[in-house]
Length: 342
Ligand code: 5AD
Image (cartoon, rainbow, N blue to C red; front, side, top):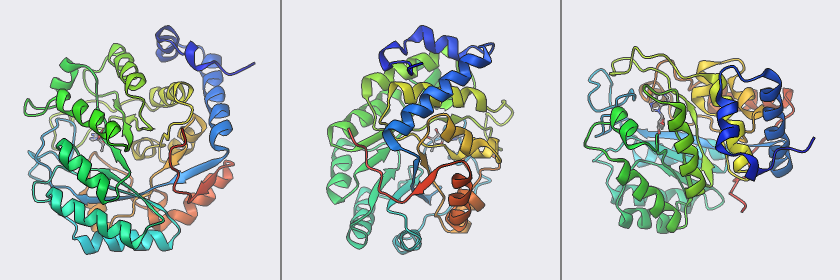
């Protein structure tokens, strides 16, 4: 049977897939179709991106996030430029050619500083791709980072529903500003990544449909989705985690709609199901993994949610083990930059 064509992945089909009583055979076919399509586009290669968590200082107070400004139990850090470049150096020696600088919205990390960090990395590692994941900025700053050498940006929209957005974020934040940033990123020529958590408090299936409609409109080059995981000392600490099963179904749906997008098997998936999460994500149609290359102290302090996986196979220390684990499932850990090929 041919895989379902992109245009037939309509909202009725998606709702059938998301139904918790969906027949197992339907879900099996969904994953198989999505993986077959992934194989057609990427073969068995899985791109590795080294993730550096450059600061856990954040001015925002997102209700789900472990490093929200209101969480006084977090010990806050900001890596120096030298520490960041040195993490890249270690990862580069191990073969990685794609670095993601992620962090909270730290007022001390000014656009000037970020620009100079990007310049240093791009001059020392001209063969490597620099991705930023540093929250919302003015159009002008987004342009400057691009000129300094960043070519990709990750900024999840989190939810496309205004009312849901307000239930996840304090009023000082706005969905409007986030979408403005995403449109600027696309216009400025970044490979742009966005996405949403699955199973956040108050999320409905209708919200997920709206999220997917938004993705169809934005046409991102990268799509990150992962289950919500409660974080200690946050207003949502007692809410249940999102479903791994639902996340996997959505990875497959997104693969069918966006055959060429870079889609990670996220850390949140590996956290909720440490033995199978990552491979299940790849088998559902993901094609990227993001091992953590932060200094170990930073990994401990950058706790977006409880028990976040940041060591072993989820990190640079376990890169050989990760390659072996992928090989056991027939995947090849690739050190290619893994640019989007349209
Ligand atoms: N559970 C799962 N994902 C989370 N993120 C932040 N907090 C949590 C949580 N409690 C995700 C957000 C953000 C990304 C960096 O991490 O989607 O965009």
